[in-house]
Image 1 (tube, rainbow, N blue to C red):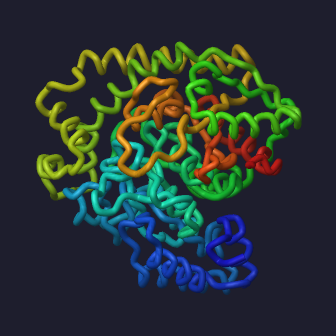
Image 2 (cartoon, rainbow, N blue to C red):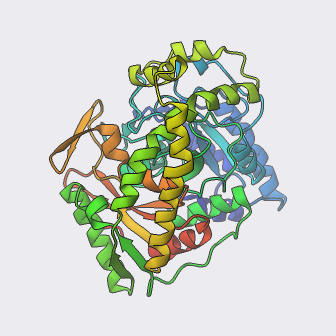
Image 3 (spheres, rainbow, N blue to C red):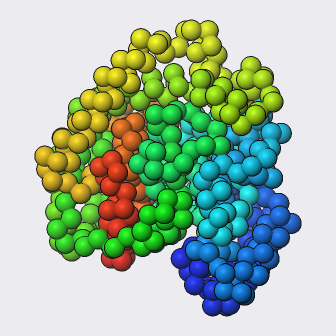
Length: 461
């Protein structure tokens, strides 16, 4: 294996054994990024990375290594990392550089990680394709003509393209799990509030969370422990007796046939090992999500951006940031809220006090009523679209590409559930496919343990 092929878990072992140094690893990955056509990074300071890696080597030599000592981890470009710009993919923030780490970056650094630059993203995280930088769309590592997904597209592309072993993205409606699925890697959305959010350019207080993309379930668990202090290695769950809800009508029958076939094949492998598949009705969940998901995100985006700027001492006027937004639809979203022509206070109040609580109650009843460990469904109903694609068809119905890509992940995100996407194969064109699992709120350790158990079965086709 070459250095860029090792997972986070592999690297923790090899670096401690002295098989290679953190500096050698960092240099190899920096060179790989420099030669990459994927546009996965917005910033990478090779000198800074090298200095951090050499400091890690010194600790490794003296036996003072921390859990992630010397392991390179990138961050999406809305997650503050001291010494790097934090543009959130929009020109108005391109020259703004935080003087201190976001909370999640600080915890990773405290665990010994080498902060490996910033990954490109969909502008202000308001989209699912990461092609809003006109001259530098993020490209899919499986085929550069295709989207890497979003909004954490650079994170998915960088991890899938073996440019870095892991990256931290953010997930509001699926923005960690969608690029994970489309780029053939693992992605984990923690329960909302499990991971700290301070220092991250936000959309929604109700819905946002950072989360990791990596190349194994073991890596997700290791990074989660570094950030939260949870058990270092959740016990691998036994697949036998695992009860998985299958929302057939809402999440499966609308999916592309090749996506559905790959996900069904993975589930059949689990069933042969003793998992119990239970068809469930999620129609009311989907209806409630469609009533409140967008209203909450759109209404909260403007005050959240303003509050974030005040909190981190941003010296750029909010109006200037908004006026410079490249993507017309995103700029119009913010301007409509400023003008009072967007989501009204009354509609938001209904969404946040009635529709979302009803959605959460529906999920809780579904899990408890059928005794489910998780819901299982195709992460994205579609494989990666060609870069620049604006519309898609699900069951013959035209949808925006954004609505199509987030259709399955959005309900759980809106309710605050933890979710994981795992790679389960490829289309006939070689595009990756992901299978998702949503668990009850707060059941993160059990979900990670389940993922570890499934991973040992070599489920991907």
